[in-house]
Length: 432
Image 1: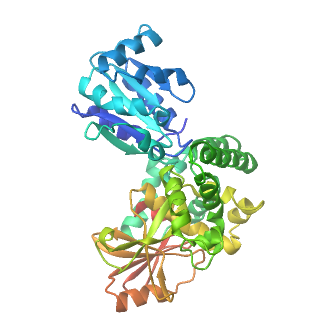
Image 2 (image 1 turned 60 degrees about the vertical axis):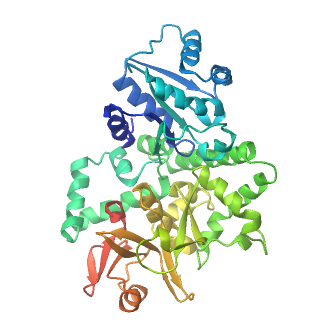
């Protein structure tokens, strides 16, 4: 059984006496259904679960009259014996994107308050336009991702105290003992290959068979493409699929800024911009936006027309590459993808920690992989797949552009470059 951090967040949600209905968003197969059912079984007398994709007949409960009285009356016919009172029952509306009327009904279920309500969906960003009246002000939102690196470590039997032990070296800015450093890098490379999709992680924990993991990942990728075919509208189907399949090529380029011409020669945002947004709304990709200047505030200082695209699960990115890529990564031989893989995993780790993604470049001669707010400062983060201790771009930013702090993430141990740049083991991105 995989331990997930979202269970703690759900417990906090339930403990608030004024909590509203909750909507959990996340890509397919990140573990939403499992987590909610586990939480419900541990915290409620009963769980009434409706999956609108598995049982389309449940949609009729929410058609027509959206009042809570009508909904609970009909639920009692489908689920005889269910008791809806005093919040002792959790009503779980799964794959709610397949029932827009149920989304509208969340307002009235929240106002009624007799049961706690959690809704989840993998394509909610896609389906909002079909909702006649979204319940603004009556729902809370929570994002769920595939397992982050710490959750992966737990799955591999690494205890919280062991993770805290490693974090101590980060907090004290000390070198990690060689044996610990070697083990952490081994686990980190495994995480790159396995990723965080729960089925893939469980298979790896149970069998240590990377071929089985790859098969699971490619099945998930096929499901993503099936979702594109099912939910994308008209010509958007082919365009979204083309953008999706172009991601490895995009990241293999020296300049990793997303180029529409890689999708189709001489193409532009006018044709493909909506398709990329579709992939983002489906929880498949992350955007990393270009900063106009390397300074805070980032949100008001970025160019939304220039960006890099990263897969939200690096294991799925690896599964999109040619045969043998898994072994190459485990052996530390990343080839043309060496920068792309490490950038993607760091972007994935930052995003799972709730950090928006930004990068900086100037005149094609100065580029910094990421900028994050760290200790209240605009902090430059450079990602390297080798252990070289040079920091030309970082020093230029510090000397000429007002940046006060830089962090270099690399496979090696802790160190410094001068008095303004820290070198951290790449897995310590989890602590930033």
